[in-house]
Length: 392
Ligand SMILES: [Zn+2]
Ligand SMILES: [Zn+2]
Image (cartoon, rainbow, N blue to C red; front, side):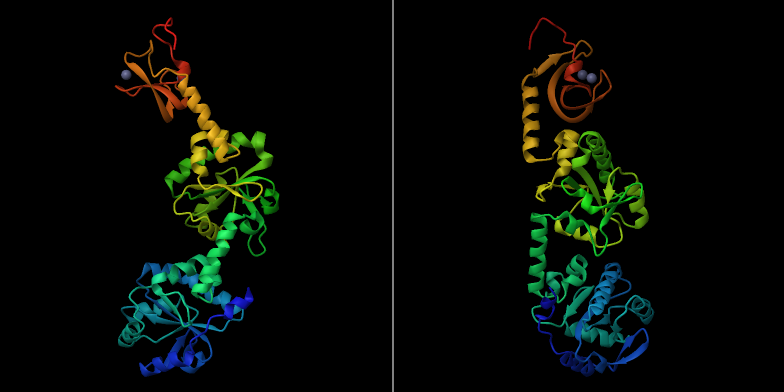
């Protein structure tokens, strides 16, 4: 892949530096002090427009720092030049503390001229000086957040390649490749054991995308744990769940994972972020099931588990069809309307996701006899018909 990196043609930094000089930029700033413009000669230059008062900018900068340091470690001669949208010099000074790259010194008029010249109408904005680069409208920022240093050299061609790699990862899942990261080959359990990713070989694996801050996610965790614990005794050797956390910080992540009986991807590296992107996770909770042969069985495992619990195993479409058919048959065998000696109103056959039976006070699912007038539900098995002679 190394060969890909220099396919883009870089605009000669000399032209850019001429523009800077013509606009009155005499030198640039680094954390060490003044740097002559000529220091940028021959480098791949990217402009970065940002402001300290802007929260999206502050959130984006760690991504860009990571990209910058990774590329420089790879020996790529890249330089980023910050052009400020800050309102005053104090904001500017505070902002550049978070940046390992160069900055155009604070001068509101100068910054305004450069902003106009490069037609920047939003921040954060990142403009690499190479041909075929993604434009601001094509959302370079989101792309860098998604792919980090892999986004280099920021061209449309590279963008297409990365999309294609994601697609193939999604279509032919290699768990070993998907769940490990640069030397980390393990997952962690709720009780802090390290479990090798290779131990998942041959199992049906559910990737659970969730976070502690999300009430629906916490509610689904209870349902999933119920199914998981049911399956652990009988199918434990061929089934596993892996938490892909979208918790806000490490502390929240630790609270979340230690309450779960399954494994988790460690919080530290990019893998969690990559998996959300590869499986296009837009909301949580989400559950993706992968078959032992690496095929994605279902992107909507959440529906399977919340509807059928452990019964849904092995979480295939055909298993769900069979469960649906059995349920329909069960419903067909029940009367549409009944009278029960315990209740004064006529009860109607109803299909409910979950209810509590008013006779035995236990949970019920799917078929119920329910009252239209008041909130009354009965298990079909708890029915005591008024006239026992009358057959269904
Ligand atoms: Zn009951
Ligand atoms: Zn009633």
